[in-house]
Length: 290
Image (cartoon, rainbow, N blue to C red; front, side, top):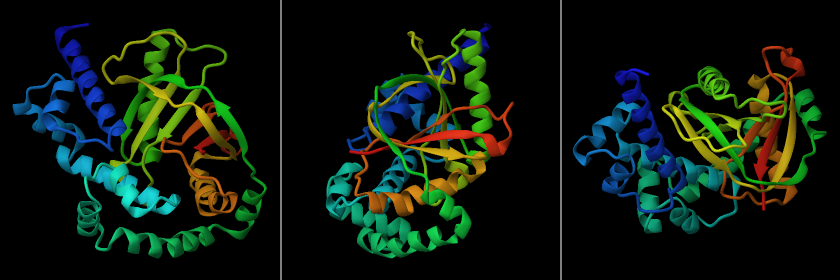
């Protein structure tokens, strides 16, 4: 590997460490100097480097993640608004309310109330026959162990960015001889397309591993939390996953009485689009529940 390539690999490793820390510590104070230290960057250049990578200033990125996480909690949990404010890193509910209203034009309480109707409206847009089929989709409740995965992240429209992320992580896994008969292929869609702009959606293409692998360049390493999950099986093309999610969050969740855990959902792909017809694709959707 030449000097330029080594430098680029190191650059991505450092950025991945910073992004991973932010994603997992939104409920804490995120000091810029500390973040720069995590990435081994000079504080003088850190803002410019992160803005170039993220496409927005670091502070705006952190605030956006906090508010979009808050929206998910407002829509899909029964947590009091004050608790949500603390859970996404605001020191006081009043500062949370102010930031929320500045970005969305209404208070968190109003947003929750208004979107109870919006969710029902969006839910009804799914064709009747499709919804009838989804009604027969009952999850299995499973307790799973934590999974260590390598991953590549892509930012942008899920239908376009996922392919790039999978190409990157699979090339790495092939070189490192990580593929086996029971290799698990997992996708993490960090953002809700109804909340986050398409060009800012974050997707991790993950390959589960059973041996120690160090982060390298665009390839990061993370642990998918274990615990209890409601596992749904989506049958058909990936483009229609949104319908299944609409059913899960718009109908099943409210009727099941289940509460969500504060970890990401993820998808496990049971067959591959390269050698499977779209209508025969099978995807397990893992929803973290208490």
